[in-house]
Image 1: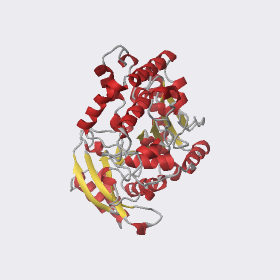
Image 2: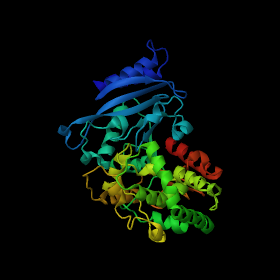
Image 3: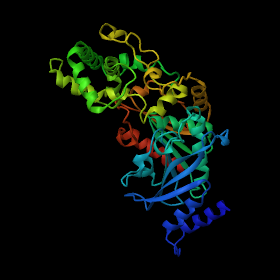
Image 4: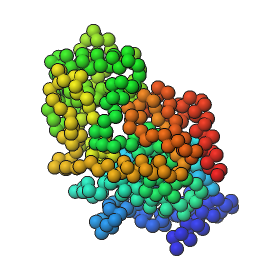
Length: 429
């Protein structure tokens, strides 16, 4: 019966002369979909209709008896005769509520837009006490599959999945588990890590990114910060009191980790090399630059990003730190296992499982799924990127000297035109 209601509403949505406003018909249709608990209307600068709905999902899709949680989904409407872009968010999706929000691919192709908040983040968190056992890639893929199948009754045209960073990882995860749900996938700057400390980031930062002169300048700045530890440590203590951070490690170790994090943060978001202060600058100038770029608060225990670190430790992977060049200045003697020590919820012990890495790698290599991969050449997350599949139905784009901010809109013109042409061609096939 639900499918029949949805189909009738679909016809009304695209037909002219309907007696009821289209907005009311769409809202009624969304509310009638299976397991939808609530639908609220939102305003949009770009779409004729916009809603947020809350869908009941199993906490564990293999064991529905475990319980359920409410997952937040944003739906933005252009027309039932248009393709639909699905943003597979890797974190919370509160940003999608803003009236000005629109996804880049949806804007380029004039599509409907669906944004799915990832399980265990913000309003899509299971009831407390949270059981971390069910925060798995497979469960997240099943979340997306159920939403896709539900909304296909309203939007039956082609579907495109896209996401940025961890959202790009989620694009690959979802397509691997449910290849037929999606027609085209566009992951931005999405890594494919093979270990909890992958091992490819450190040599990338040390030997590859930028020029040797650039890398030498960053290293010299780090050493200067470490040499001034006695003078800068009181500034960190004061900042810590102001922010009210809560760390699991001593503040002096937070200092060290923030110095080790500096080059990753620097290149990830494309900081101009000229922003690095002269080494003869006063303490406040050096501290301000360092603490703003490599925020010590990143190492705070149990915050809104804690679910990510659980996933990283379990199967998504992360990066490590090479302390050898700095060891004469550090309090810490070893950075191995830092993710578990600093970030994971207390008393949670997780062993990394490489099964997901191999599953996605094999799928990308052997499938004929249409993919457009977008990376930045200077982004540290490019180090563990999946290799170029080198097949006709995959486009692999590396934006020269670009950071984690690489997008279609800031690609060099020839690359940008090729991506847009490919998207439009695939939509017509």
